[in-house]
Image (cartoon, rainbow, N blue to C red; front, side, top):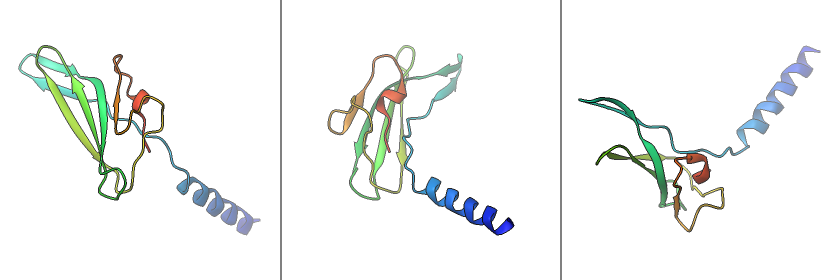
Length: 103
C-alpha cells in the first residue's frame, strides 16, 4: 500500500511539473515622501519571446508623473495567453493584469 502511495505521488508531481500555468505581471507599490502608493498596471511587452532570454516588460502608472516598469525573466520562450495580446504588446485601461496573462 505504501509503494502505491509513493508511485501515485510521483505521478501527480510529474503531471504538475509539465503543466504550464499562465502568469501575470505583479502588483507594484512604491513609497515616496508622500507615502505609499499602489501603481496601476497599464501594459506589457514581450521581448526576445522565442528564446530562453525572453523578458516580459510590465508597465505601471501612478498619480501625477509617477510611473514604473518591471521585467520578468522566464528562462524560457514566452507567449501571451489571452486575446488582448496584439503581437508582442498588450494593454488594458482598467489595471487588470490578468488581461495580459502570459506563459
